[in-house]
Image (cartoon, rainbow, N blue to C red; front, side, top):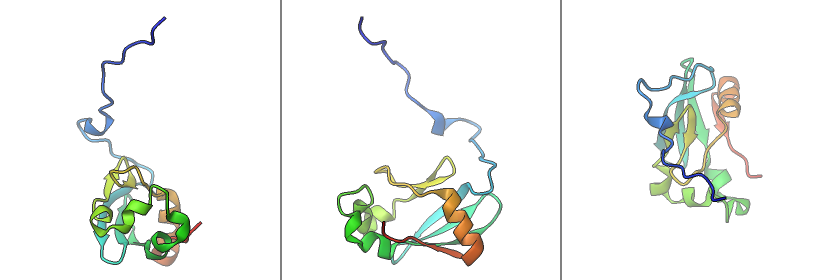
Length: 113
């Protein structure tokens, strides 16, 4: 028996009105900054920075989805997707861990794995 055909495209991101995540750690805005940094704002109004320069420079990032973000043009393509920070290549960041660190320290410094 052949697999069923899927004729519909997942259009979740195009829902009107837009989905408004309520969890306090959901991201509402993100801005790429020089030096592989991000400025993020969460649902509850918390704002802070994410520092990714050391993480992206690490050899352990080579060959991963994050390697492309070493290119400043690719890094600048950051966006919010359903309450999370994401890039068009599929790289994303954990919004809950990011929010916890920013609330505690005012910034989140990503470390290489």
